[in-house]
Image 1 (cartoon, one colour):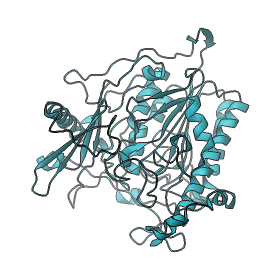
Image 2: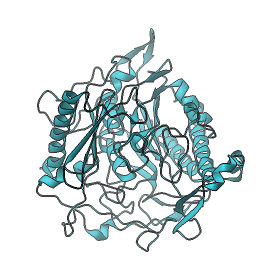
Image 3: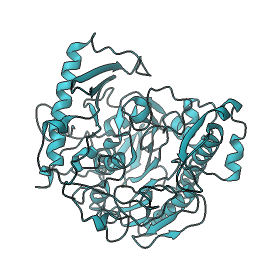
Length: 508
């Protein structure tokens, strides 16, 4: 299934099988009674691809994530749909590229007409909960894009990122400070929700979006102590990040910054362990799909150990390639590693395929990974598109009343003179030539086309073989000019579809 609507030969490919509650699955020769599959979707905040033990990071300790990687399905080419936070989160929930609904950069909201995985699973009898960072609109009850409006029955959420003792909104109410380490808190809230779903004998979707390891960094003493012996030479390099004391930018030695960042990642890893242990104690882990990923690559405040070119905010691999793991013991009975590209936009189509829910009649940019989970495919049929959209004109008509877009949950980082976050989204009634500009990329198999426009307006194209050129240092565009033309044509056609969605055509 490719999400351009139905044009050319890229229409939706039906799922290979569904998992109806009354069916029986045959797994590895054994008969397994079929039940609705539970879903838990985990996402780190600014957690880079290389920041795990299983990718041989020289310092980080992530034993739980490492265990998931060696027991489940590990994606070595998993991508966030964007190189920054809010847009990727929109793709995670909708299966659609964020430019389709105007979530261009952090601080842009989703649109109320979008259909999320929570809406769809709820229609199938699932209880749906969101816990942690939201960042695609305010979480207050009046917001038309809060988690409740987007299909979630239960939520304890924050407009943006959060640190220790986070102020969270419960069901859209006024923020309340919850004492403790933030990753442990959101997992505890999710486990409460899971217990309530169990009591009702309901299948569930739990979306857990951690506030870690986004800066400003902090950590428990026990976790900080694990990183007391980072290399001394890191003391000589300074990086810019937010001060926990003032909320403003400050320069600090990289050694101290990484000590705190790695402590946050370790705490997140431990919280995931608490979750997995609880699933086993409840005897529901076998038929619960747990999916872990991140929203973008490593930020500029943590430049260490990446094998990639670029970082958060770029369409180079360092900005968009992130950790990706699926655990689902009923179906993934043997550990596997795949080099088939996958992206956060694949989450909704995959879960709908598993739950046998038809996709809404609108363009999607992801595809079901169920055939991959089942070991039935060896390559991805549909390319993956990325695009940094140029921002709307000054004076564009707001899509949502600005008062409804005002955030309420406090955070440490100051922006625009305030310690909360407001959101925006705009109408885009017509398509212009300049709307096609902005950095964009097209991944087809193991080739990646990067397209940029120079200051003189000319288009610059680069082609990389990701299988043999991990740091995108060898441009093969001249050697493979026909492939470049083919991929550029497909990319432009995809942009046509995205702009039609941005204009509002999908809602008519």
